[in-house]
Amino acid sequence: MPKAVTLIRSSALSDAAEYAYAATAPADARLIFLAGSCPLNEDGSTAGIGDFAAQAAKCIENMRIALSAAGADIDDVISTRVLVASTHQSDLVAAWNVVRDAFGSHDVPSTLLGVTVLGYNDQLVEIEVVAAVQD
Image (cartoon, rainbow, N blue to C red; front, side, top):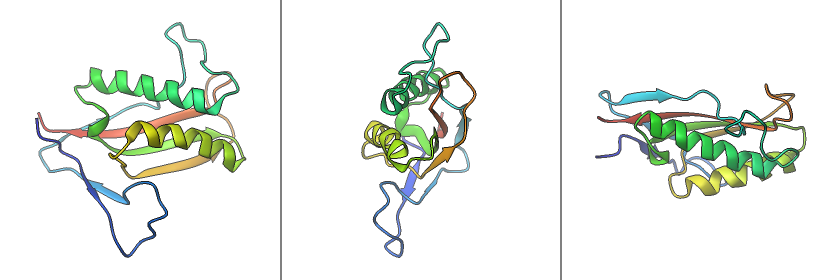
């Protein structure tokens, strides 16, 4: 199946970012909007308490499961938003490094945000994604 997502780069923008600045999908693509992927175990408990990287990894694992249920995979993601409950840049970077490594060369446009609090007890990371597929 051909991939619907096209990543766009511009030489007029900084190359310091570890992701494409834009992405497109054709008009006939089916868009998939995932709820924020949380670091929850199957029993509802929070994984990796106190560990930003471990929580990011669990979010990625849960995101992959949700994408699969919608008929997509990580290469179909068109954008991400990574939320980290911290005011310390090092914590944001710890979570981001896991996300960046999970996406590899499919470096979609992404936003990394430090937030005050997230919805579940002991939750430090949440990842939102939009994907596009052509059926």
